[in-house]
Amino acid sequence: MGADVYRIKGLMLTGTPDVDRAMVVMTMEDAQMLFWMDGRFTEWVVRSDNFRDANQHARAIRGATADLDVDVLTWEELMPELQQARALDDAGNNIFFIFLILLVGFEIFNTATMTVLERVREFGVLQAIGLRPTQVGILVLIELAIKIISGIAVGMAILVALALAFPDLTIPLTEDLKEMYASFGFSVEGIRFSTRPVVFVQPLLSVLAISLLAIVYPVWKVQRFSPVEAMRHV
Image (cartoon, rainbow, N blue to C red; front, side, top):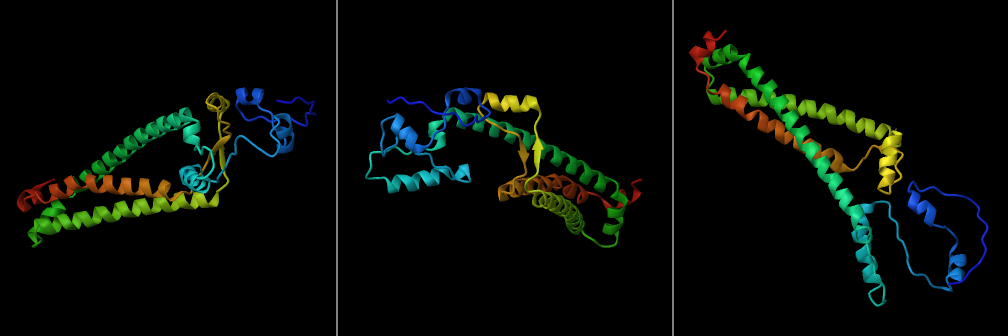
């Protein structure tokens, strides 16, 4: 290892105090001279626009360097603790998402059931004029399905419009949250909207599935009404 004197041109803050205290950024030529690595280097960092493509890029680099004595590692292999923290965060988000979907399902179940119970007399009249219970059930199913699909469509349209209208909008974090992220080695200034298709498709399919499941009982219930008892219902 060589030794030299360098002029400091500026300070850079990464958000992680340990990194800020230990890291020095210099040109490739100066670093090779300092470490007596003329024309050589020990590590080569490849950065992509999407961290989810790391494994794909690693496979491509391994194929291109198969004849060389080098190790190709993804960020998950270099920082397993970061991957574990991310997996833990994903697990917490998934649990919250499941509770949210169940809450939506119970709300739709309650609304659909009340809609049926408030119209018992109407369903009795429909059966009295010739509609079979199955036909009444299909009628209620179509009505509830239209309401659910319309509500989901309107909600998704508003969400997509906001995400596309403010692609660079950043919701600032409080200082406490910034310090919490910094303790894990992250420099996070705020939260931004994501336009990944899965962000929209997964909630859409989940809400649609729980909604259809929630209206099974009301549809079954309306087919059990007796015309005479239904018409006497107050």
